[in-house]
Amino acid sequence: MTLSFGKVYLVGAGLNAATLTQRGLALIQAADVILYDALLDPALLATARADCRLIPVGKRGGGVSTPQAEINQLLVQYCQAGQQVVRLKGGDPGVFGRSLPEIHALQAAGCAWEWVPGVSTALAAPLLAGIPLTDQAYSSGFAVMTAHDLDRLPWPALAQLETLVFLMGGRNLGGIVARLQGAGVPGERAIAIIQAAGSPAQRVWRGTTADILEQVAGVSLSPCVIVVGDVVELQQTSGGPLAGKRILVTRAAEQASHFRDLLVNLGAQVVEMPALEIQPPRSWAALDEAIAHLDQVHWLLLTSANGVQGFFERLKHQGLDSRALGNCKIAVVGRKTAQTLASYHLQPDFIPPDFIADALIEHFSEAIAGQTFLFPRVETGGRDVLVKAFREQGATVWEVPAYESGCPTTLAPAARAALEAGTIEIITFASSKTVTNAHHLLQEIPHWPRLLAPVKIASIGPQTSQACRDCFGRVDIEARSYTLEGLGEAIAAATQM
Image (tube, rainbow, N blue to C red):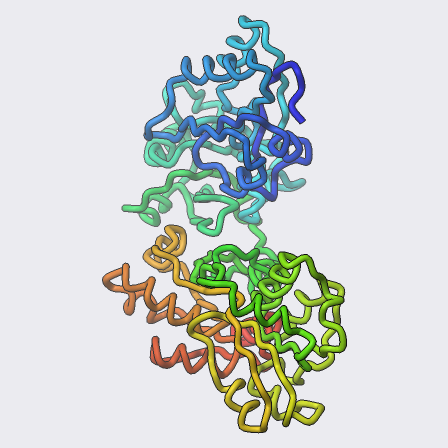
């Protein structure tokens, strides 16, 4: 709810959505206006209200930025209009956050304002790379500095310190190394460069002041954090069977990735590649007609979470709920489908033991002949094996479109960048359609077969594996249990071999 008096909150966004404070999240969710810097995690803005005004103001090193005077004016303008304004800054607003010019402008205009601390990049980036900044034996303290103007720094004094952290130093790495060596830092002093910390594109180089420039020659390092000191040798990698593995996950663009979270919990770094767009069918007429005759249906057949959601949302649109199913039984294929059904407070009457459609008819528990099945499904591109098998045994199957799945228009930039950088080790597929769509999207990269050659292809089950062979000529990992959990287990097992 908008208050009667405006106020500006200078909020530290941390390094990513995972490092945002609860106070920061609450203010973002309540804001009328958000002015945000570049390089912020997009997930932060996704939590804002639908009617919140989002204003990018740049602040990317070397890029185009909104002039500071204009930012000051916008903050004052919206505050005086009675708006709740969040000025969202990376890290902590008090650590190289350039907050004072904005605060002075607000004070001069009589505007209310508040600082909201965040987790500084100087603290978060090293730890996310597995590097502690202090240690009882190696480092009793550390210094943090910006590398924008190297001539202002007291290099002889810095050379005496155990641990140094440089922010915004990607373009000046050569100068940093030269000045450290000139101040007496030995060539064997450890150094780490952490690029894009906390993001799926995070990359870490470790070396010494003598060889680090050779390691990163020709690489654009920004944004990065540079750590100098023996603590670099204490680097610890996160636990889990997939620790250090970078995995490309294909998924539906609109759906939260349960699989992503599963892989992250196993230690993996995940890059998402939306390969499906879930949309309404071209017409609801067939499904509406089927709902009007539910009293004639013996079994509701559900084979996807999207089918479940499409059916029950249309049921609600007709002013009905699950009671309209009456004596109709429910057969479900897939654990995820069953979980989605449970969200509507219903349990299936039958689930095949292997969680796949091909096992449904083989293990069906009741007579099929003379039964009527209602099958809400994808409008185009679905497999007909199940429908054919039921009809061959004397059943009536009403196929009705409950959703459509299309291919995104472009390949996600993060996925393309990771593939072109050669950092992806495994690509996963949880349906045949994600395989064919991903194959189509990869055509945007002229040399995609060469990029994919060293990448292992992981499939959720036999039908998806066949699609992988058709499109890519191979499949390297296949789940034994045809679920996302089973796919995660198969990937973990394969990487331990």
